[in-house]
Amino acid sequence: WGALTLAGVGSGWAGAPPQHHDRAAGAAERDRGAAARSVPAPGARAARQGVLVRTPVVVRVAPDSGTERYTVGGIPVIHRHVAGNNVVAANLYLLGGVRQTPAEKAGLEAILLDASERGTRKYPKAVLRRRMASLGSAIVSAPSEDWTLFGLRSTTATFDSTWAVLADRVMAPRLDSVETEQVRALYATGVRQRRDSPDALLEYLADSAAFDGHPYGLSPAGTERSIANITLADLRRYQREQMVKSRMLLVVVGNVDRARVERLVAATLATLPAGSYRWTLPPAPARARSAAVVVARPLATNYILGYYSGPPATSADYPALRIATAVLSGRMFAEIRSRRNLTYAVDAPFLERAVSAGGLYVTTVSPDLTLDLMKQEIEGLRRDQIDPAALDRLVQQFITDYFLDNETNSDQA
Image (cartoon, rainbow, N blue to C red; front, top):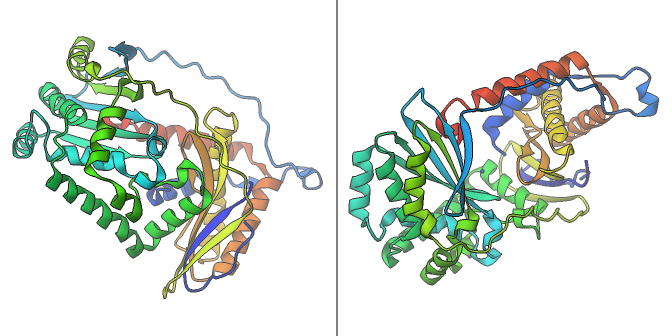
Protein backbone atom coordinates (compact mmCIF):
# COMPACT_ATOMS: atom_id res chain seq x y z
CA TRP A 1 0.00 0.00 0.00
CA GLY A 2 3.02 2.29 0.20
CA ALA A 3 3.57 5.25 2.49
CA LEU A 4 0.45 6.73 4.06
CA THR A 5 0.24 10.40 4.96
CA LEU A 6 -2.42 11.10 7.59
CA ALA A 7 -4.12 14.29 8.69
CA GLY A 8 -6.15 14.54 11.87
CA VAL A 9 -8.48 17.16 13.33
CA GLY A 10 -9.67 16.73 16.90
CA SER A 11 -8.61 16.44 20.51
CA GLY A 12 -8.18 12.74 21.22
CA TRP A 13 -5.38 11.71 18.85
CA ALA A 14 -1.93 13.19 18.78
CA GLY A 15 0.32 10.32 17.78
CA ALA A 16 1.60 9.37 14.34
CA PRO A 17 0.08 6.07 13.22
CA PRO A 18 2.02 3.75 10.92
CA GLN A 19 1.98 5.57 7.91
CA HIS A 20 -13.57 17.93 -6.21
CA HIS A 21 -12.83 12.53 -1.56
CA ASP A 22 -16.41 12.88 -1.78
CA ARG A 23 -18.05 11.79 1.46
CA ALA A 24 -21.39 11.25 -0.29
CA ALA A 25 -19.67 8.59 -2.38
CA GLY A 26 -18.57 6.81 0.79
CA ALA A 27 -21.95 5.19 1.38
CA ALA A 28 -21.92 3.72 -2.12
CA GLU A 29 -18.40 2.42 -1.56
CA ARG A 30 -19.47 0.74 1.69
CA ASP A 31 -22.42 -0.90 -0.05
CA ARG A 32 -20.18 -2.15 -2.84
CA GLY A 33 -17.51 -3.38 -0.48
CA ALA A 34 -19.96 -5.13 1.84
CA ALA A 35 -20.92 -7.28 -1.13
CA ALA A 36 -17.34 -8.53 -1.40
CA ARG A 37 -16.21 -9.61 2.06
CA SER A 38 -12.95 -11.53 1.94
CA VAL A 39 -12.73 -15.17 2.97
CA PRO A 40 -9.51 -17.04 3.85
CA ALA A 41 -7.94 -18.61 0.78
CA PRO A 42 -7.57 -22.39 1.20
CA GLY A 43 -3.97 -23.08 2.14
CA ALA A 44 -3.10 -19.45 1.56
CA ARG A 45 -2.39 -18.21 5.07
CA ALA A 46 1.11 -19.64 5.04
CA ALA A 47 1.66 -18.55 1.46
CA ARG A 48 0.26 -15.07 2.20
CA GLN A 49 -1.83 -15.03 -0.98
CA GLY A 50 -3.72 -11.76 -1.31
CA VAL A 51 -5.03 -11.61 -4.87
CA LEU A 52 -7.64 -13.77 -6.50
CA VAL A 53 -6.73 -14.66 -10.09
CA ARG A 54 -9.75 -15.61 -12.16
CA THR A 55 -10.39 -16.30 -15.82
CA PRO A 56 -12.00 -13.14 -17.24
CA VAL A 57 -15.45 -13.39 -18.76
CA VAL A 58 -15.60 -11.57 -22.09
CA VAL A 59 -18.93 -9.86 -22.76
CA ARG A 60 -19.49 -8.50 -26.25
CA VAL A 61 -21.02 -5.04 -26.24
CA ALA A 62 -22.65 -3.51 -29.30
CA PRO A 63 -20.84 -0.44 -30.66
CA ASP A 64 -22.17 2.90 -29.46
CA SER A 65 -23.70 4.18 -32.67
CA GLY A 66 -25.04 7.28 -30.94
CA THR A 67 -21.62 8.79 -30.25
CA GLU A 68 -19.23 10.25 -32.82
CA ARG A 69 -15.88 11.99 -32.64
CA TYR A 70 -14.71 14.75 -34.93
CA THR A 71 -12.60 17.90 -34.95
CA VAL A 72 -13.71 21.47 -35.59
CA GLY A 73 -10.92 23.92 -36.35
CA GLY A 74 -8.45 21.99 -34.22
CA ILE A 75 -10.82 21.37 -31.28
CA PRO A 76 -11.69 17.68 -30.71
CA VAL A 77 -15.39 17.04 -30.15
CA ILE A 78 -17.14 14.03 -28.61
CA HIS A 79 -20.80 14.23 -29.60
CA ARG A 80 -23.45 11.93 -28.18
CA HIS A 81 -26.85 12.18 -29.85
CA VAL A 82 -29.79 11.82 -27.45
CA ALA A 83 -33.21 12.07 -29.08
CA GLY A 84 -35.25 11.16 -26.01
CA ASN A 85 -35.28 14.65 -24.49
CA ASN A 86 -34.65 18.27 -25.41
CA VAL A 87 -31.91 18.98 -22.87
CA VAL A 88 -28.41 19.78 -24.12
CA ALA A 89 -25.28 19.53 -21.99
CA ALA A 90 -22.01 20.80 -23.45
CA ASN A 91 -18.81 20.65 -21.43
CA LEU A 92 -15.63 22.39 -22.51
CA TYR A 93 -12.68 20.74 -20.78
CA LEU A 94 -9.62 22.96 -20.36
CA LEU A 95 -6.83 20.43 -19.93
CA GLY A 96 -3.97 20.84 -17.52
CA GLY A 97 -5.68 21.69 -14.25
CA VAL A 98 -3.40 22.77 -11.44
CA ARG A 99 -0.29 22.34 -13.62
CA GLN A 100 -1.21 25.40 -15.69
CA THR A 101 -0.47 27.93 -12.95
CA PRO A 102 2.49 28.32 -10.59
CA ALA A 103 1.86 27.56 -6.93
CA GLU A 104 1.96 31.24 -6.00
CA LYS A 105 -0.96 31.91 -8.40
CA ALA A 106 -3.08 28.83 -7.67
CA GLY A 107 -6.77 29.44 -8.28
CA LEU A 108 -6.17 31.82 -11.19
CA GLU A 109 -8.15 29.90 -13.83
CA ALA A 110 -11.12 29.38 -11.53
CA ILE A 111 -11.25 33.08 -10.67
CA LEU A 112 -10.94 34.05 -14.35
CA LEU A 113 -13.90 31.93 -15.42
CA ASP A 114 -16.08 33.09 -12.54
CA ALA A 115 -15.13 36.72 -13.21
CA SER A 116 -16.28 36.30 -16.81
CA GLU A 117 -19.84 36.00 -15.47
CA ARG A 118 -19.58 39.69 -14.53
CA GLY A 119 -19.58 40.74 -18.18
CA THR A 120 -17.96 40.15 -21.59
CA ARG A 121 -17.24 42.19 -24.70
CA LYS A 122 -20.65 41.41 -26.24
CA TYR A 123 -22.61 41.05 -23.02
CA PRO A 124 -22.15 43.63 -20.25
CA LYS A 125 -22.97 42.31 -16.78
CA ALA A 126 -26.63 43.36 -16.64
CA VAL A 127 -27.27 42.26 -20.22
CA LEU A 128 -25.60 38.90 -19.64
CA ARG A 129 -27.66 38.16 -16.54
CA ARG A 130 -30.93 39.19 -18.17
CA ARG A 131 -30.04 37.08 -21.18
CA MET A 132 -29.35 33.97 -19.12
CA ALA A 133 -32.50 34.48 -17.05
CA SER A 134 -34.65 34.80 -20.16
CA LEU A 135 -33.11 31.67 -21.67
CA GLY A 136 -33.54 29.62 -18.51
CA SER A 137 -30.09 28.15 -19.16
CA ALA A 138 -27.11 27.68 -16.87
CA ILE A 139 -23.34 27.92 -17.29
CA VAL A 140 -21.26 25.88 -14.86
CA SER A 141 -17.60 25.92 -13.87
CA ALA A 142 -15.76 23.17 -11.98
CA PRO A 143 -11.96 23.35 -11.59
CA SER A 144 -10.13 20.15 -10.69
CA GLU A 145 -6.61 18.78 -10.52
CA ASP A 146 -6.39 17.54 -14.13
CA TRP A 147 -8.74 19.90 -15.97
CA THR A 148 -11.30 22.64 -15.56
CA LEU A 149 -14.85 21.97 -16.72
CA PHE A 150 -16.70 24.96 -18.20
CA GLY A 151 -20.08 23.98 -19.56
CA LEU A 152 -23.66 24.86 -20.35
CA ARG A 153 -27.06 23.33 -19.66
CA SER A 154 -29.84 24.40 -22.02
CA THR A 155 -32.75 23.20 -24.09
CA THR A 156 -32.40 22.33 -27.75
CA ALA A 157 -34.19 25.58 -28.65
CA THR A 158 -31.89 27.79 -26.55
CA PHE A 159 -28.61 25.98 -27.28
CA ASP A 160 -27.34 28.47 -29.88
CA SER A 161 -28.02 31.52 -27.69
CA THR A 162 -26.51 29.91 -24.60
CA TRP A 163 -23.45 28.82 -26.56
CA ALA A 164 -22.91 32.42 -27.69
CA VAL A 165 -22.71 33.54 -24.04
CA LEU A 166 -20.40 30.69 -23.02
CA ALA A 167 -18.06 31.28 -25.96
CA ASP A 168 -17.83 35.01 -25.25
CA ARG A 169 -17.03 34.32 -21.60
CA VAL A 170 -14.10 32.16 -22.73
CA MET A 171 -12.92 34.42 -25.54
CA ALA A 172 -13.59 37.98 -24.36
CA PRO A 173 -14.27 38.44 -20.64
CA ARG A 174 -14.53 42.11 -19.71
CA LEU A 175 -12.56 41.72 -16.44
CA ASP A 176 -13.65 44.99 -14.90
CA SER A 177 -11.32 45.84 -12.01
CA VAL A 178 -14.10 46.35 -9.44
CA GLU A 179 -16.06 43.25 -10.43
CA THR A 180 -12.95 41.10 -10.60
CA GLU A 181 -11.84 42.21 -7.16
CA GLN A 182 -15.22 41.16 -5.77
CA VAL A 183 -14.79 37.69 -7.25
CA ARG A 184 -11.27 37.43 -5.85
CA ALA A 185 -12.56 38.46 -2.42
CA LEU A 186 -15.27 35.79 -2.58
CA TYR A 187 -12.64 33.14 -3.32
CA ALA A 188 -10.50 34.35 -0.43
CA THR A 189 -13.49 34.11 1.90
CA GLY A 190 -14.28 30.64 0.62
CA VAL A 191 -10.82 29.24 1.30
CA ARG A 192 -10.78 30.83 4.77
CA GLN A 193 -14.00 29.00 5.57
CA ARG A 194 -12.15 25.69 5.26
CA ARG A 195 -11.18 26.22 8.89
CA ASP A 196 -14.84 26.22 9.94
CA SER A 197 -15.57 22.68 8.74
CA PRO A 198 -13.53 19.77 10.14
CA ASP A 199 -14.01 17.73 6.96
CA ALA A 200 -13.09 20.61 4.63
CA LEU A 201 -9.97 21.40 6.66
CA LEU A 202 -9.09 17.71 6.87
CA GLU A 203 -9.27 17.18 3.11
CA TYR A 204 -7.17 20.26 2.44
CA LEU A 205 -4.50 19.22 4.96
CA ALA A 206 -4.38 15.59 3.82
CA ASP A 207 -4.12 16.51 0.15
CA SER A 208 -1.46 19.15 0.78
CA ALA A 209 0.62 16.86 2.98
CA ALA A 210 0.34 13.70 0.89
CA PHE A 211 1.23 15.53 -2.34
CA ASP A 212 3.70 18.05 -0.99
CA GLY A 213 5.93 19.16 -3.86
CA HIS A 214 3.61 17.59 -6.45
CA PRO A 215 1.04 19.48 -8.58
CA TYR A 216 -1.76 17.59 -6.82
CA GLY A 217 -0.70 19.31 -3.63
CA LEU A 218 -2.10 22.56 -5.06
CA SER A 219 -5.75 23.46 -4.61
CA PRO A 220 -7.65 24.29 -7.84
CA ALA A 221 -9.44 27.01 -5.85
CA GLY A 222 -6.17 28.41 -4.49
CA THR A 223 -5.08 29.39 -1.00
CA GLU A 224 -5.34 32.65 0.90
CA ARG A 225 -1.78 33.51 -0.07
CA SER A 226 -2.04 32.57 -3.76
CA ILE A 227 -5.36 34.38 -4.20
CA ALA A 228 -3.88 37.51 -2.66
CA ASN A 229 -1.07 37.33 -5.26
CA ILE A 230 -3.40 37.25 -8.29
CA THR A 231 -3.65 40.58 -10.11
CA LEU A 232 -5.88 41.86 -12.89
CA ALA A 233 -2.87 41.78 -15.21
CA ASP A 234 -2.34 38.08 -14.34
CA LEU A 235 -5.93 37.29 -15.30
CA ARG A 236 -5.73 39.13 -18.60
CA ARG A 237 -2.41 37.52 -19.48
CA TYR A 238 -3.72 34.07 -18.60
CA GLN A 239 -6.82 34.55 -20.74
CA ARG A 240 -4.68 35.65 -23.65
CA GLU A 241 -2.07 32.89 -23.36
CA GLN A 242 -3.95 29.89 -21.96
CA MET A 243 -7.34 30.01 -23.68
CA VAL A 244 -6.01 28.12 -26.68
CA LYS A 245 -7.46 25.31 -28.77
CA SER A 246 -4.75 22.79 -27.92
CA ARG A 247 -6.01 22.76 -24.32
CA MET A 248 -9.64 22.18 -25.28
CA LEU A 249 -11.88 19.13 -25.51
CA LEU A 250 -15.59 19.65 -26.16
CA VAL A 251 -18.22 17.07 -25.17
CA VAL A 252 -21.82 17.60 -26.33
CA VAL A 253 -24.74 15.42 -25.25
CA GLY A 254 -28.24 16.16 -26.48
CA ASN A 255 -30.70 16.42 -29.34
CA VAL A 256 -28.58 18.58 -31.64
CA ASP A 257 -27.04 17.55 -34.94
CA ARG A 258 -23.38 17.61 -35.92
CA ALA A 259 -23.76 20.42 -38.47
CA ARG A 260 -25.18 22.71 -35.79
CA VAL A 261 -22.32 22.02 -33.39
CA GLU A 262 -19.73 22.49 -36.13
CA ARG A 263 -21.26 25.81 -37.15
CA LEU A 264 -21.30 27.19 -33.59
CA VAL A 265 -17.77 26.05 -32.74
CA ALA A 266 -16.30 27.19 -36.06
CA ALA A 267 -17.64 30.72 -35.57
CA THR A 268 -16.35 31.05 -31.99
CA LEU A 269 -13.81 28.86 -30.20
CA ALA A 270 -12.22 27.63 -33.42
CA THR A 271 -11.00 31.19 -34.08
CA LEU A 272 -8.81 31.14 -30.96
CA PRO A 273 -5.04 30.63 -31.24
CA ALA A 274 -3.95 27.02 -31.56
CA GLY A 275 -1.34 27.16 -28.81
CA SER A 276 1.26 24.47 -28.19
CA TYR A 277 -0.20 22.60 -25.22
CA ARG A 278 0.21 18.80 -25.10
CA TRP A 279 -1.46 16.61 -22.53
CA THR A 280 0.93 14.41 -20.52
CA LEU A 281 0.46 12.39 -17.37
CA PRO A 282 1.54 14.21 -14.21
CA PRO A 283 4.72 12.87 -12.64
CA ALA A 284 4.35 10.13 -10.07
CA PRO A 285 4.47 11.55 -6.54
CA ALA A 286 7.84 11.10 -4.90
CA ARG A 287 7.93 8.17 -2.52
CA ALA A 288 8.25 9.41 1.01
CA ARG A 289 8.10 8.06 4.51
CA SER A 290 4.81 7.97 6.32
CA ALA A 291 3.90 11.21 8.03
CA ALA A 292 1.14 12.75 10.11
CA VAL A 293 -0.26 16.26 10.45
CA VAL A 294 -2.39 16.93 13.53
CA VAL A 295 -4.53 19.99 14.23
CA ALA A 296 -5.74 20.17 17.83
CA ARG A 297 -9.35 21.27 18.18
CA PRO A 298 -11.69 21.08 21.22
CA LEU A 299 -13.89 18.48 19.52
CA ALA A 300 -15.17 15.21 20.95
CA THR A 301 -14.90 13.60 17.53
CA ASN A 302 -11.58 13.06 15.78
CA TYR A 303 -11.50 13.38 11.97
CA ILE A 304 -8.76 11.31 10.34
CA LEU A 305 -7.88 11.06 6.64
CA GLY A 306 -4.80 9.65 4.97
CA TYR A 307 -3.70 9.13 1.36
CA TYR A 308 -1.20 6.86 -0.35
CA SER A 309 -0.04 7.08 -3.96
CA GLY A 310 -1.65 4.84 -6.55
CA PRO A 311 -0.97 3.86 -10.17
CA PRO A 312 -1.51 6.11 -13.21
CA ALA A 313 -4.69 5.77 -15.26
CA THR A 314 -2.70 3.96 -17.97
CA SER A 315 -1.83 1.10 -15.61
CA ALA A 316 -3.74 -2.18 -15.34
CA ASP A 317 -3.47 -1.75 -11.56
CA TYR A 318 -5.73 1.33 -11.70
CA PRO A 319 -9.06 -0.56 -11.89
CA ALA A 320 -7.68 -3.22 -9.54
CA LEU A 321 -7.04 -0.61 -6.86
CA ARG A 322 -10.49 0.85 -7.53
CA ILE A 323 -12.08 -2.50 -6.69
CA ALA A 324 -9.77 -3.09 -3.73
CA THR A 325 -10.71 0.21 -2.10
CA ALA A 326 -14.41 -0.64 -2.49
CA VAL A 327 -13.85 -4.01 -0.83
CA LEU A 328 -11.87 -2.39 1.98
CA SER A 329 -14.62 0.19 2.53
CA GLY A 330 -17.14 -2.60 3.01
CA ARG A 331 -14.90 -4.55 5.36
CA MET A 332 -14.18 -1.54 7.55
CA PHE A 333 -17.82 -0.46 7.63
CA ALA A 334 -18.96 -3.93 8.69
CA GLU A 335 -16.35 -4.23 11.45
CA ILE A 336 -15.91 -0.68 12.74
CA ARG A 337 -19.35 0.82 12.16
CA SER A 338 -21.78 -2.09 12.30
CA ARG A 339 -20.09 -4.47 14.74
CA ARG A 340 -18.10 -2.13 16.99
CA ASN A 341 -20.18 1.07 16.79
CA LEU A 342 -17.00 3.16 16.82
CA THR A 343 -17.96 5.52 14.01
CA TYR A 344 -20.72 6.84 11.81
CA ALA A 345 -18.36 7.30 8.86
CA VAL A 346 -15.50 5.07 7.74
CA ASP A 347 -14.30 4.80 4.18
CA ALA A 348 -11.42 3.88 1.86
CA PRO A 349 -11.65 6.66 -0.76
CA PHE A 350 -10.23 6.31 -4.26
CA LEU A 351 -9.14 9.51 -6.01
CA GLU A 352 -9.92 9.16 -9.72
CA ARG A 353 -7.17 11.31 -11.18
CA ALA A 354 -4.68 10.87 -13.98
CA VAL A 355 -2.41 9.49 -11.25
CA SER A 356 -4.61 7.84 -8.67
CA ALA A 357 -4.48 7.72 -4.90
CA GLY A 358 -6.19 5.64 -2.28
CA GLY A 359 -6.94 6.57 1.27
CA LEU A 360 -8.41 5.88 4.68
CA TYR A 361 -11.04 8.06 6.36
CA VAL A 362 -12.80 7.81 9.70
CA THR A 363 -14.48 9.96 12.33
CA THR A 364 -14.35 8.53 15.83
CA VAL A 365 -14.05 9.24 19.55
CA SER A 366 -11.69 6.25 19.93
CA PRO A 367 -8.93 6.90 17.40
CA ASP A 368 -6.28 4.49 18.68
CA LEU A 369 -8.59 1.46 18.71
CA THR A 370 -10.21 2.45 15.43
CA LEU A 371 -6.91 2.89 13.60
CA ASP A 372 -5.74 -0.49 14.87
CA LEU A 373 -8.91 -2.11 13.51
CA MET A 374 -8.44 -0.36 10.17
CA LYS A 375 -4.92 -1.75 10.00
CA GLN A 376 -6.25 -5.24 10.70
CA GLU A 377 -8.75 -4.95 7.85
CA ILE A 378 -5.99 -3.85 5.48
CA GLU A 379 -3.89 -6.85 6.49
CA GLY A 380 -6.92 -9.10 6.01
CA LEU A 381 -7.44 -7.78 2.51
CA ARG A 382 -3.78 -8.40 1.66
CA ARG A 383 -3.81 -11.89 3.19
CA ASP A 384 -7.18 -13.35 2.25
CA GLN A 385 -8.81 -14.29 -0.99
CA ILE A 386 -11.95 -12.50 -2.14
CA ASP A 387 -14.93 -14.81 -2.40
CA PRO A 388 -15.65 -15.28 -6.15
CA ALA A 389 -19.43 -15.05 -5.76
CA ALA A 390 -19.11 -11.89 -3.69
CA LEU A 391 -16.74 -10.41 -6.26
CA ASP A 392 -19.30 -11.09 -8.98
CA ARG A 393 -21.94 -9.24 -6.94
CA LEU A 394 -19.55 -6.35 -6.48
CA VAL A 395 -18.88 -6.14 -10.22
CA GLN A 396 -22.62 -6.16 -10.94
CA GLN A 397 -23.15 -3.35 -8.44
CA PHE A 398 -20.41 -1.30 -10.11
CA ILE A 399 -22.14 -1.79 -13.46
CA THR A 400 -25.51 -0.79 -12.00
CA ASP A 401 -24.03 2.30 -10.37
CA TYR A 402 -22.34 3.23 -13.64
CA PHE A 403 -25.67 3.40 -15.44
CA LEU A 404 -27.34 5.19 -12.53
CA ASP A 405 -24.53 7.75 -12.54
CA ASN A 406 -25.05 8.40 -16.26
CA GLU A 407 -28.81 8.86 -16.38
CA THR A 408 -28.81 12.54 -17.36
CA ASN A 409 -27.23 14.32 -20.31
CA SER A 410 -25.03 16.38 -17.99
CA ASP A 411 -23.81 13.22 -16.23
CA GLN A 412 -22.81 11.73 -19.58
CA ALA A 413 -21.00 14.89 -20.67
